[in-house]
Structure formats: structure tokens, C-alpha cells
Image 1: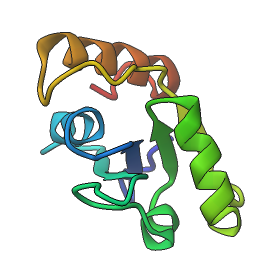
Image 2: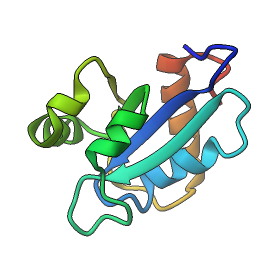
Image 3: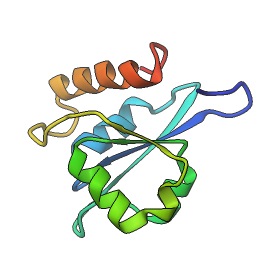
Image 4: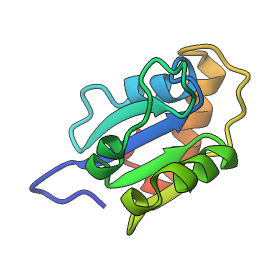
Length: 117
């Protein structure tokens, strides 16, 4: 996925961008190969996803299927050619919860590769 010229850009999406996607973004802080950002789909999200976020990303990783549905409904054109991965992580964890971190590492590695986290 990443090239030697530029890191792969990963965009993590959840509903409120307070717990799951923000935790995922923090796990990638300082990673040598990947850049990560996060956003939420709901109006009250800490950072609400925009077409600009999607344009920046090489890969979009959502926490639940409903996030994919919302993105396709609101930003269909911006998703053209984008890989969207559903991590299947329910909304039951707090920010930086250790179980959440383990789940994120496991699921991201499944899809991105063993060097991801």
C-alpha cells in the first residue's frame, strides 16, 4: 500500500469522532509509513467528515456499516475509486480503551498489513 515516496493516508470514520476513530488516529501518531486522520458522520461530531477529508484519504476505514451508507449517500462522488474498509467495531468503547486499541490493531492489520500498527 504505502510507497517509498509518500505515506499511505488513512481516514478513520465513526459517528461522533470522540472515541473510536479518534483512538485509531492517535494509534498512528508518529508512524513512519502511514498518516491518519479521523472524522465523524453526525452533526455533533468533534470533526465532521467532509469531501475534503475523503479526497485526502487513500483508504477510508469505517467502524460500522452505517458509516459506509452515510458516506455513500452524502459523498458518493468523493468516494469514487476509494477503498472503504468496515472494521466492525461497535460503539461501546471510551477513548483509548485498551480493548478498543487491541481491536483496532487487529482489524487494521487484517486489511492494511502487519506493519500497520
